[in-house]
Image (cartoon, rainbow, N blue to C red; front, side, top):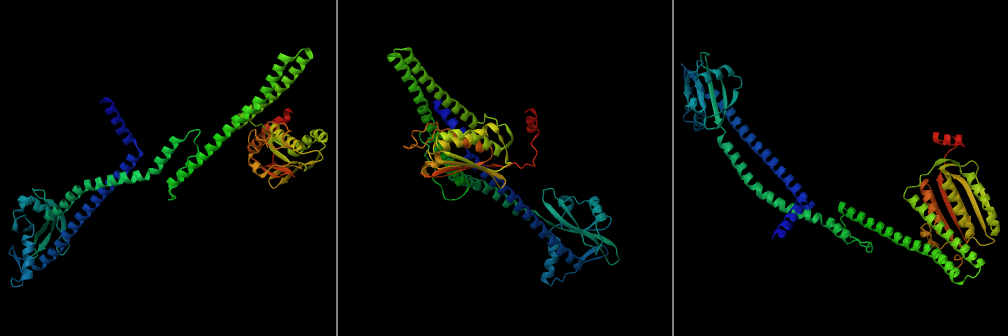
Length: 504
């Protein structure tokens, strides 16, 4: 029982914290504020309409009063024709439609339609205050709002009205806002009664809309839960709406594809490393076992130890290369950038490879422009040149040629190595920069290597802001073209570079 209660409590907490609940809640809050604001605006509009209509009615009655009212010997007389029903109606409406009062300048009431001194508090003192503020005819009347003892608001028009002897009397007429405000209040209560129902409908609609809108997000979450290292081919179908959720699905699918490629590369790397390390280890073990069980002389033991040491050296070179490449790709290798005469470096490296090229019966030539400078790490740039030259000589049969060139190309410098070797199949080209990747063919099987050289080349070019292109025709040769940012000669090296030259 307690466990069920805890589960229900957790489900309730998760529901409240869920994105669907928050979206529906935000929609409901917005709609509540919208309805409240709309109700306030409409109510104020109704109040203004009632007030303006009442003022318009008072203006008409005030104008009629000036035409029909006469005061003789302090006696108010209404001069309407009793035979004319319209005039009689106007006068009757003025006298009984609302507060009506005529008083002399001393505050004495001459005529009134009700005990307004009780309902509106218009006693002698209040009347004298109104007289002091009242404008004289023919000026427009003054306006005032009074509230009676029952809380009803009254709009009043009042002013000083002359008799035939030019003595002035206070004329006051008014209208109640009670009926109009009653209508406004009825609207307010009915609107307030309808709002909860509208909010309930809005909450249901918001919950449904939020749920439908979050279906793709839920699918993404469910797909992410199904993803494992062995199941990275999952793709979420697009909704076809082209909205933000479709873009989210596209981004998620691309991320899965990148993860899949990364996992494939990691698996392939693990396989290649295992193979590359197993070969020298097997050879070392074989040499030692042969020496242990079959060697009979010191010379036999020496030969076994020499062969084992050669395999250990090969194993060490693999480990060093892997460690260096791993450090480079993880950002642990800090490039020491200096100003380099790239043309001189290429010429020096070509001179070093002339002897290996002659031994392999390969013609090595160079076409290098003068004074080509770049910003780069001398060690890494040297490794880049060496790897490309070594590969070109390695995969070119006897009697072939290797041509090296350096020259400016706009604001870049181009460095190319072209050979007449065995070439690379078109389907293999996208993989030649992968670690441990080597093209497996009968004519290249005798060639030894770790398959890491071009991985280093790709990393070095990338870190120097350059680009590498490969063109190859199987059986005819391969051309590697590298472009690096060119540093103009009139650009002074940074202070750190100048200090390095001073120390050298």
